[in-house]
Image (cartoon, rainbow, N blue to C red):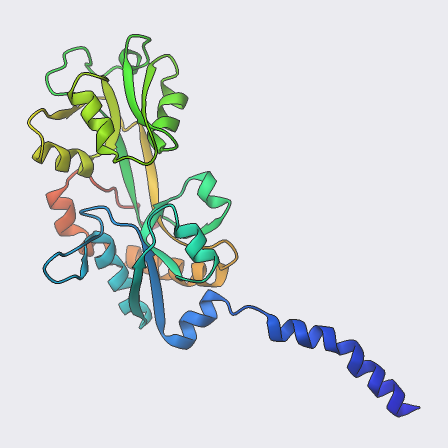
Length: 276
């Protein structure tokens, strides 16, 4: 009788045993066991790019992630450039552990990714052709049926234009072309205004005869938080990274790591306020 009872209990436990054996290893467990963070990334100079001479990745977000790895005593690996659009898929299927090139914390991404608090913020400004006297710094001058805004379909520029300047016309470019095509639409007269960050504007002006100039609005048209992202269920890994980011902010480490970058690109990033 007793043998039958024991056998019945063991049989009843088999599904649970099988489930435990099949349980997928978490990214956190994988990182801690291996001592490595596999970084997924998309390139965008000067934030993160490949040095053509050495083949190594360089840029501000590389410097920041190297400091995160040092603080955690973890090695960084950069196995492949997944591209910005493929990062959520690569995180979900375990090909990479962290989106190390940072991602803006918009709600659409928040549905499929778990994000840390912002490492820093990116301000987005409105730009016009240099010398265009129509725009003196008033929002209503942009939110005008006679104004054409250069945007990219599916991009933050499109969302900004629709949300904040609904009366203006939209001059759209497809999602699969270079973002600089929108800037060229402004400099060539096909559009009047576009939205970009200070770094992209600075690099564009270095390489083009006709320049863009910031419209002197009282504040940026948008500010986005740059976060480290992991798979939506990888909250343990997210919490570990967030603790490190918080420590680096409190101790001035992020301020130090970004100092040279902020000198070269004064409008590029906004550091979070200290919580004390």
